[in-house]
Length: 337
Image (tube, rainbow, N blue to C red; front, side):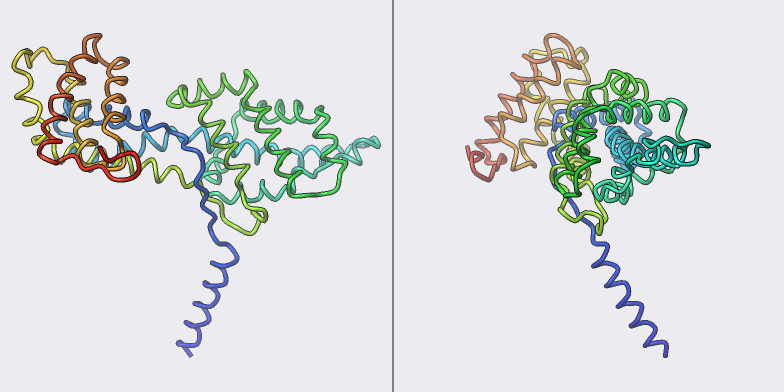
């Protein structure tokens, strides 16, 4: 009897997995590699100042920082769902009036039943956002964005025409574009998601890409954003390998500092050079020039005016030695040097 019940449960789980399979989309990268490198740099720099910070804790800090950068993407996605939900509430208010007008009685709730909205609602991160209590500002944004949408000719045609998957997709793309172009959204994002201030355009492109690539029948599937894990894995590996090989990288750098006062070298420069060496040796899919140029560019923003020349000179010398000892091994088209 117990065996039979066990088998029945296995069958039910298998059916549930088929009916609610998870759709993972590889979309345009939301966080640039440079942004991820900066986040790793900041964590390593924190360790330099706080030797009590364990490596495991540092990894947790990094993951949390990447997660923070994604929060606006989840919030904006949840905003689309909330606007659709608000339509249902609007319809109820209009039809329960003491003397509803003809327009009230024929108020369209089509967007509320959009299958892509249903799929987005199933995303776990979006669900976390939807569970949060809406502030007065959130409510005002939802109403403002629907008001902007409702007067658009495209929306009126959408409400009047027969259902089609493409029309359902296109109306969400229109709504998304209306939202990200409003001053109130930009201001809200800058005030409430300061860690995303430099990534607004990439977040916009990422969500647009998600909407364009969602499957034709999304309502039967759980929907997951796949890029976050890819980006987290890159940043995590860069952090771990840089920390694990800290002494080795120091040994490579120190002989090149003969003409430099080591006590006057900016700590951030040492961190950047170690990260660059990590990429040269351990990241075989990233071209040498890309790695070096990235860290030189980062130094222009986060270090001293002379740092770019210093870093370039030191790395150039070490790079030639690593090539001679065949410690730099790049693979893939255009990477073999």
